[in-house]
Image (cartoon, rainbow, N blue to C red; front, side):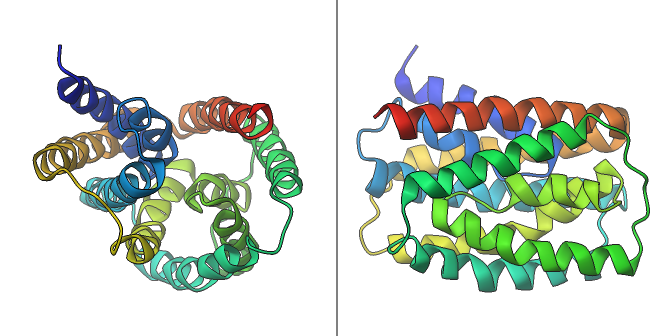
Length: 246
């Protein structure tokens, strides 16, 4: 089996999972594509950002089919994440990266712990304002680390009172635009393989849409919370290992 076929099949699985959770696929695509592409900065990161935006967009379409997207609240979060993520990218030049990762690890550990405990659903405007306030530091932290804000924003929405499915739907919309805006600085130096890029975009879009539809129709909100809790622990442990071992 060729490397291209492995990438397409692997990206399909990762996009299905990310679509189920209302995430862009970059959180998993970066380490996966790095197994096949040699240049992290000029190949893997730009391609992952493109795929992140596309998969989040099609996941949003999938959730929208079931009327799970609260569009006004989603667009409010889009504004916050788009404004504050670049600030984090600028601050990354001044801060100690390992200290920032410790803060991130503590945040993820707390969120994962809370996801396995009962949460009272109360998705009113008061709780939405709290989510907006928390989205700002989340976006700054995400910008500092070079990761998408959705990985922390989705569990935050659940913990302030949004049903897990609706949180995933809102999150999918909220992370789409920041993915494409984060791509802009890479465009002048990015190296895309046209055929591979088109194939990955196509399979990623279809799989993310299918994942969102799967969650919308068949996955209970409590189960979705647990799946996400396990996923963020596994992915963060992997990322921490790459940061502190190398």
